[in-house]
Length: 388
Ligand SMILES: Cc1ncc(COP(=O)(O)O)c(C=O)c1O
Image (cartoon, rainbow, N blue to C red):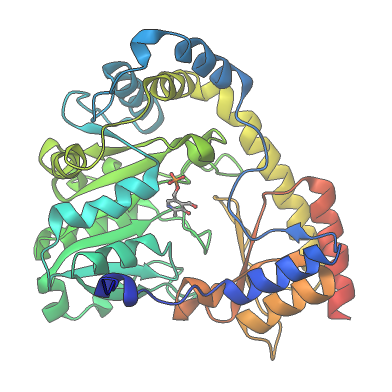
């Protein structure tokens, strides 16, 4: 038998972080003390009461059977309650909420619901790679929307040619943004709604980082915008909000007809999320007002430490208002990749080359706040040393 991969696999772009990963692994094997500020995965454990809720529910046999794909009503009611308290947006738990197996799973299946082969999908770049790759999997014509300092890392909708916009079926957006740490205000979302309405584009707003905000400046929900419900949906995740990346749970919300498209795809592909995880997630959402401030406080302190360290090293950045990323300009004469390689080789620090997130990421590296304060201080000292 002659096995061959499908074109969609063969056409996948190369893994752009490979070189840095290889150097990191070699250095670590040689005994180097690596400070990894590359991955966006919280180093802090999930709050104990959430873990206890999981343990309690996991012991109950009635939770061991197939879950209901769209999510337990307890979970969906908790989502609706949190949405109303946090954003002032009312959701009908029966049809306007569906659970997702982490936002990555939800995002990856959105194109299956709304995109036919040849349709345009508008994707921000630099950005989370899943938007473009899974759109390409369904045969979409992926068009990138550059995020640059000049446009405050918000896609310039006026720069999208009418002929492209008219062929677009779907647009992905993500605020607070990975990797640039930019936020979007109600004014920008208003423009998006008008654009999407005019060109009949479904908007999928990835809101994975709305709860990691600083200085008390709460990011808004896309669904708070007038008319947003008619054009789009929002996908949230418990991963970053409650330090639950390993648990794989999130949710998509929006008008029944739009969320229903995703739910229909999912009902044919998965069988939902282990009920104890849903019940523990419901507990987390019901107690968000107590559970999230200590998490934000940790990142806010770390933000101060890393900002000081990067400034001491003479590096240029915008102070993030949300997310746990710093989007830092490379020093003069360095590319994203050469600076990341230098950092890992000379300072044993892993930072992600911005170019790995798309061509407009060239000239930047991304640092995460997923390391304790003392390690961030040490990272700063090492960067100063490496740049001397
Ligand atoms: C912008 C963005 N969206 C979605 C995800 C996926 O998160 P999860 O699948 O854990 O909810 C990530 C993970 O890093 C991300 O950065």
